[in-house]
Amino acid sequence: MASIVFDGVTKRYPDGTTAVRELDLTVGDGELAILVGPSGCGKSTALRMVAGLEEVTAGRVVLDGEDVTKRSPSDRDIAMVFQNYALYPHMTVSQNMSFALRLSKLPKAQVRAKVRETAAILGLEALLDRKPGQLSGGQRQRVAMGRAIVREPKAFLMDEPLSNLDAKLRVQTRMEIARLQQRLGATMLYVTHDQTEAMTLGDRVVAMRGGVLQQAGPPAELYGRPANVFVAGFIGSPAMNLLGARIEAGRLVLPFASLALEPERRARLDVRDGAPLIAGIRPHAFREVDGADGADATLTVEVLEALGAESFAACPIAAGDLPEAALDELAGTSEADHRQLTVRLEATSPAAPGAPLHVALDGAAVHLFDADDGRNLER
Image (cartoon, rainbow, N blue to C red; front, side, top):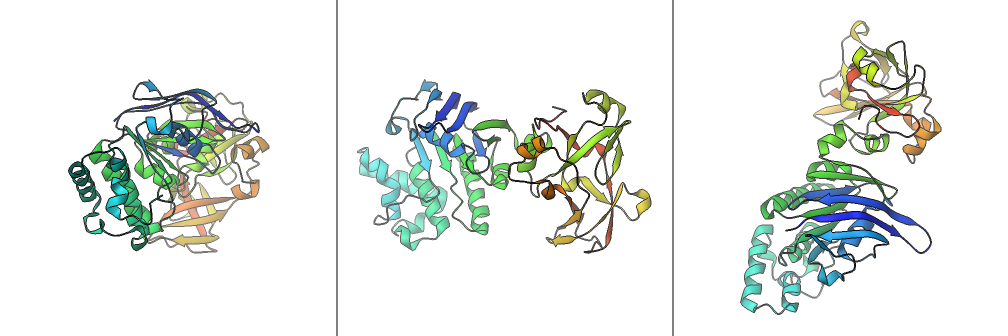
């Protein structure tokens, strides 16, 4: 296996559109790195530049220590798995998996052995004589992965490989990919718009927006210490509550509550009193309490979503006065989208639509972001 390095990589199209801007990123040997972000953020373009399917406008792509920026796709020793499987419909599973090996003129006995070994890893032994039309979506995706594995490439590239599967199959296949990567010790660069996939699969998650890398790190870091308000709002399900806030006289003033700030924390925040901020609160940061006396806020449940092991309550709040600059960072949202709180509750909670909900909130669990540029003020 090998490392993949983006060294100041930019992709600009003839019409002036910049899909990827000065991307610096290293995917380590044997690492599973996930490129995640909304549609049009440049993640698939970055993947295709590694594969050689898109030309690099500026910068370099380095594979296993060698500059491959100008090499043809066939000279890069990389295998790619697409979302639409790209299987030959007239060939059997065995023929699809062995296609590249047969082109390279390997001895037939060696080809058969490699196909059988890979089929055993993926649970495809009983399907080798079937054609793609006789397979389920999950089976076809495993065949596509098998075709990549038999080549023993330096790195695997996966472009939204689970997007055509139903919810149950996505979870199952996601687990298979994780086990496969660990078993092979393979270097994988994986693209998805699904942040749940990113958080559960990756050794490292790379969040992109508008062609620019926003944050790269272990999943827990992007969840617990988001670099900016975009990452905060994109990573996590349900999404983080983001609302206008300010600091006054050592207290954090939110649209629904006022919380004490520890003096040490206040001293670290280079923010003047009364200046607009963006506060970020995970739904799981709230704790339901029995009565108003021990509560930081009393909310009203508008909608209650029961999921068995837990529930989520949507509670309307007053406008948070989010500045226009903040809304720009939260692309696709308006201030109205931030006039409710999502609160996580235990499955045994007595909460009901229309009823009051008393909650406590630890001020330390509230993330604070700059209202102008969206950066996390405590990173």
